Length: 239
Image (cartoon, rainbow, N blue to C red; front, top):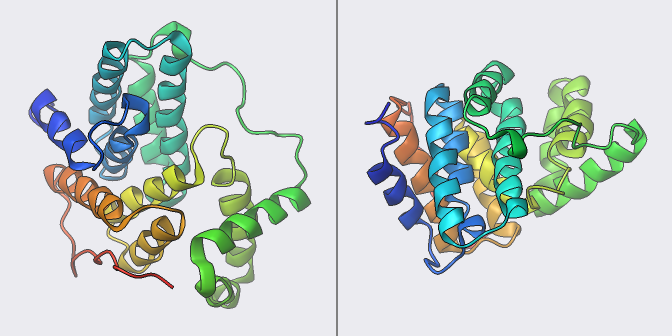
């Protein structure tokens, strides 16, 4: 494992994301790397990502709340990735992460608002879905509804509403990065294209989106993932 998630490799991944002067929490490399390892079925690497990022954060002169936020960002990214990567992989990654998690950085209650109604989650999901898919939202939702109405409902209400629509920890853009990383590691080209575009619509620059793609691919390659038909490129202009 030292070879797969070595300090040198993690430092390299961190350097890929532009704007090198970003403070530790603001550079999303650790979210992307943790999710890509999870989706590549290498849960044992996830704790190394967290520990490296935590060491960086402490070097910045952070406080306990920043450390807690770092831990929550990685946990929630892994949770959100489960809808794409599969929850067995998320569970295994969270178990591995929990084994090295300092007691003061653990959570003991649900982060999401379990009292929120399904109807409200449906509205939240519709709003997020439109912001990610832009002009293609209706056609993508129509596709999901047509292949199986339950899929369309689940995607909108449970996926984009309850799961991805919770943005108290990960921003909508960080959530898009999470989706891209999980999809690249699971070789899902149609959806990779959707969510590379979604990251651009969410405010990521071309260079930032390229970096997310590159980090995800390098982690996936190191983990033994091969793509049958390659990985979609980032578009320079997104409608």
